[in-house]
Length: 93
Image (cartoon, rainbow, N blue to C red; front, top):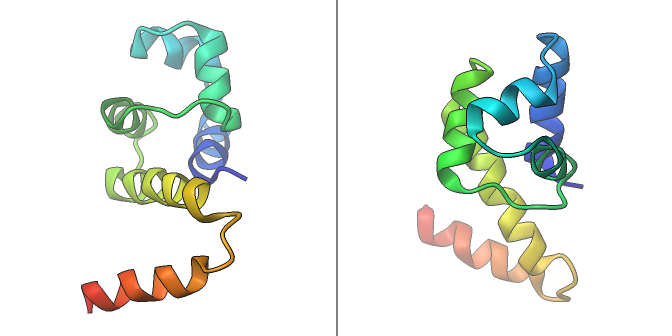
């Protein structure tokens, strides 16, 4: 399940905004925005930042969710995913 899409939908609905309003601000069509929200299409980094701004959300949170979705897509079916993620985490500590 895509974390960023869920967060976008949650905030959009809580603010009473329609997909078409946000898609117009992003200069994309509504079906494309809907796919981003459902996790069927990846948003570009610039779009993630713009969506965060439009929803008055924390851009750092949105970027973290965006990156997490990308990492998950790569490792989700890998047997050694947890071991690889531990190695990465150790690089940051």
